Image 1 (cartoon, rainbow, N blue to C red):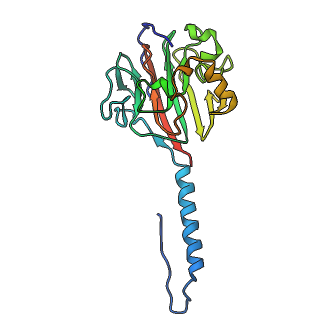
Image 2 (cartoon, helix red, strand yellow; image 1 turned 90 degrees about the vertical axis):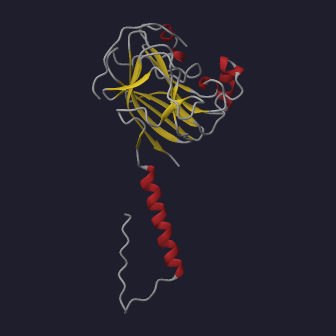
Image 3 (cartoon, rainbow, N blue to C red; image 1 turned 180 degrees about the vertical axis):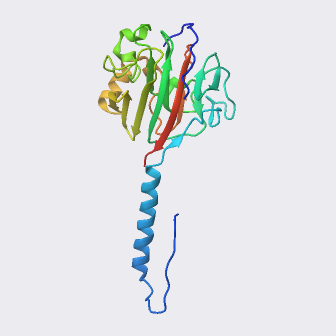
Length: 249
């Protein structure tokens, strides 16, 4: 975790139909047939919802976002500019108004030279600071920031716990494609189409890694089964765009 003043950059523009036919010669369906039809319709709707993506950033405003533990209040330093959700000044982490349990999250990110940020998930709103409860997808300029010296804290890593492979970030000034999948205890971090880190929450391996890290100081770390999604204010200029989520069962 990190800070540095960096040059300004400009982000790149970024029925159910029911029509029963009734005829005098038709027999009424049995109750079991009706129940089966109702169940099939519910399954169909559930499958449709599972495939539905929801935009978390409309490209023009901070609607649907707020500060950590400040419902309805957007922290200073975050703005919507040219289709980019931009952290350009101090103000604190920005989190979704909604909470999510299982989901697939896609987003694009760009940092300035030496820049550092992150994406938190399952943030417990009761903790004082986001990182005391929420795992983090690291957003970083690996080449120039000191955190890039360790794969545990490099781009795409599960910050401080699970390392990411080297060589998958795009040059500073280009957009990177991030993806986080959280399904029960299973978590995946993706960067530009490459699986960067995967782990299982609350597993023996995970518990040991937490005990051996600074997160051991915070008993709520990684324990929430649902929570807010957050964008980190780490003191650097960073942009996010095309942020969308698909809720999983």
